[in-house]
Length: 518
Image (tube, rainbow, N blue to C red; front, side):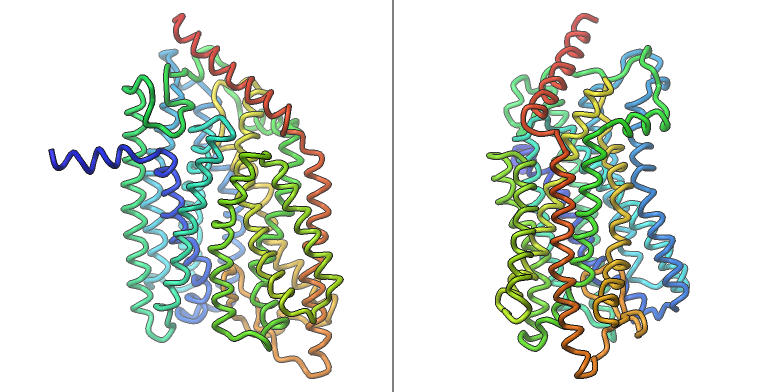
């Protein structure tokens, strides 16, 4: 009896909390990866420059292509029914269980691939290439199935916002690993940091196993619970099992799916806006230390800058909790548009104030990153609405959630590459200062290294500072204007969104009636 009480207590946890905890086990690994993997290979393993850039080039290609590839491999069974001979099809509960089982496998494998960075086991160049591809592959699989569950577990905007709330809460907790890592990072004595990473990997792997096991039990318990009273979200888990696909359904090839997607107007406008958003997020990450050094270094201490950087990782998750409450009241579309207007207004204000208002400048540098990252986290909710619209427009039997998330990533991930390239070109254009003529270092929080800015000559220092300031404010202004235009063309909100939700609900009810008639 005593052993049943903890199990009963765990089964009593809200489904949204169990779902959100998966974000914790990803975040504690990924933030440490972003902060230290380049410095580890450059400063500790002494990788040569050619091997480093070959690895980064292959990684960029793999990083862009694996999202749609894994999305297609995951969801093609929902788009094609030729492999089902019995005619019974898949239930909506079976779709959720398939994604949960995939997370139960891929989560621990992500933790193992994370471990592979911190122990030398091959020539540095080969290890760098293999580790990057393995880690990013498993990270993509985890992210795709985790995001797809957001669309599969819940239909209403309220329930999806509730799920995202817990993701932000647990992601904020996971970001604390950034602060803890500073106590262990030592390039001269790497053993303590290696032990810290082993602890993170073991915690993450066991967490994935436990959370997915618990989530699987809760989904299966919903089948035996007529009222589904213990579930925080009930779409696809309560009541009759909805059969998706049948023997008579037509199979869909990848080419046909892409043609359908090319006619999806709201998808095209969304990825246009999101491409700019991804660019801006990574621009802030790549150039955050540069702005601190050339605009604020004479006025804040190094420890203050480190704390400011660490808070910039945690604050977006905490701030997102407030944004999600606004989403429940006003809708995601209105909140995202408000954030674009806020970004434009703050940037114009900073441009008018100039670089000498230091308190305002410090606030702007921090808030620019926090609001931009917060917007990125809200856009997951928009993609789930696009999943609904794709299902309704193309009369699918089951939503291809992971595949649509993968296609969004395919179109928007080039923004990660454009950010450092365009940013360094703009800095050179404004100041004549070429960052890439110096030796490599790694900026904290960036996945791409840049050369250390040299101490400029006294006559050049004001020009460099002014150039950094213009880069700081003009990029957000340009991004905000482009995003306000593209976002104004996006129509999946208000009445149309309610109509799409109602039509998807009607499709589900129609499938339920078909099941009962059979």
